[in-house]
Image 1: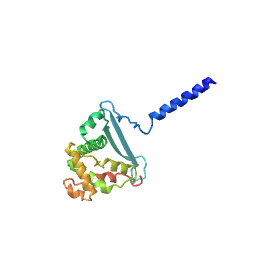
Image 2: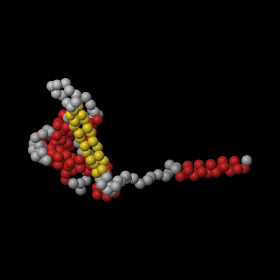
Image 3: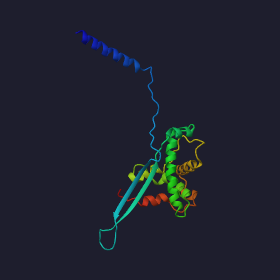
Image 4: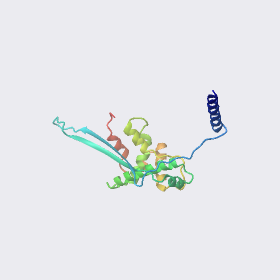
Length: 201
């Protein structure tokens, strides 16, 4: 009987200590955690679509395919990235950095065709505000997210190309004619990309 009373008393004592430790007067907090990856780690994404090729003769042995792939460099030192922002939320800075890395890769591909890749990418960011509506289907939503440059917590110390893309998004938000703002780019990359997406998706 005595051991049962001691066990019950011990349980109530522990319960009281736990209640006091987690009382309303004490704020519980922990440091923000970051996920880091090995040097040179990347995240690769590939989308492939194939359709039956249409010929005069009704044959079904040929297909045509469109493949789209991208590769993101994964962060390996988030503390350094956070301190480089100087007053900028690491999340906002990181999202802008990721998008500009993607935009730079597209720009290099467009440059190889003889067009000005930077201006064509700025035009695409501008047009995305009016041409892509949210929650349509998966591919359009991915395009919309990729072409939406975050506007929150912009620091004066950020690279100038971040500001170029932010200005392009502002132009789109204010309904400016993007082809008139960027006349040096004769084609719309966004219209080209959306024309490749089947309407049934």
